[in-house]
Length: 485
Ligand code: NAD
Image (cartoon, rainbow, N blue to C red; front, side):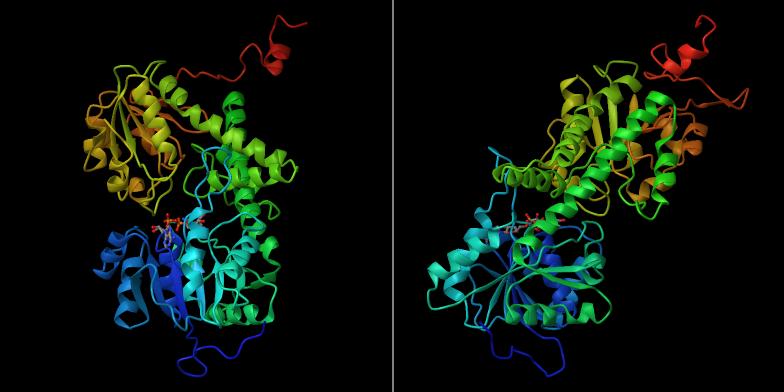
């Protein structure tokens, strides 16, 4: 169905009337950024407290620059917040950006919020509006939403578009305003025209706009996230092999990543992927594949590998502690699943802390931005006000999240407050030389542990290591031994 012209404020200026349903991470960032590029946006949410906070100028999430961007666009009259259902007469597009968490039974995406939003939207839809699904949804969801809207509003011929979002928490605004690409799944010319107009200020600056059919767009989002998750699991398994061989995964990753076919991104070995997207999206993709009798063995492997990695974090800490965490105090620096956000959803820190507590350790924690969110998820830990208070009296420090501020840690001061100088850098984030010079034994990921520098000899002290290179099962070591042959 082709449509008449849209509601422009002034000819030549991008100004669509947009309603964003769901004012969470994606909805809020998308809404603020779309207002920033000139559209008139109302963000709505069923969470009344969230809307009240936003109206009072408080962002419910931490994302650098977001609160200021919201304030600027509210003041300019381009951005407002409302409860839901709200009046959306004459909206050119309704963007659905509600959550799609994994279902407990089969791992598939729970679409109830998307379908609820569509049901609530239906009575309000004007003849010109298009419905854009920004939430990450399994292929075919656009068809379901279209059927639902058509059944609620037989008087309309609704246009439902897939426009998956690729922003990353921690750099969400920059990602939205300068995306690598904008993916739009849409089968009608009128829908494509609205989307071209919506993103015109970004495409004018060079952002590629990729039109495709709706199911393909829905799948593209999952394929991208599954590939990134696979890259992470791949390098983490290489890290395990490096530990067994006495090699250094950071150098392996550098040597691999400089090959442009591979690229450097997502080749940082660490505690495994977490957050609100990769675990749930890999799980939903696998469930979709199963439902269509397809096997995605690579993604299955990445997902299993990640689960095993996180289950194995406790073993890393125990081995650095000499085998047992019982009765020990462990300081955890960084709780959020990545730096730059306060998001604690599926953060690997929670799994490690639970396991430490189960093993009888006392846990002290500090995070620059995630403490409020963490309080709701962690029970029985000591929340501390800075890294030094956190490390006070600890038998080991674990760096979980590589916040930039940890680069500036005063390592001598840290070494002065711990009970035992053991540093477990699960992100290989700190300068290893500086850590050992401060007197710590350093356990990184995928690289040999390093003893503190012995002041007398100015050489590292030896470290007991669970996987020393050249152990007797190592064929190379057998071949070289005097007894062989
Ligand atoms: P979120 O939980 O931060 O926000 C969802 C919001 O929707 C909440 O504020 C909730 O109250 C609201 N909501 C729920 N049901 C509603 C309804 N019927 N009507 C109106 N509001 C409703 O979720 P998020 O992280 O923004 O993710 C949203 C979607 O975007 C998910 O599908 C996610 O996979 C996808 N996504 C997320 C990211 C990310 O980094 N967080 C990145 C890309 C894509």
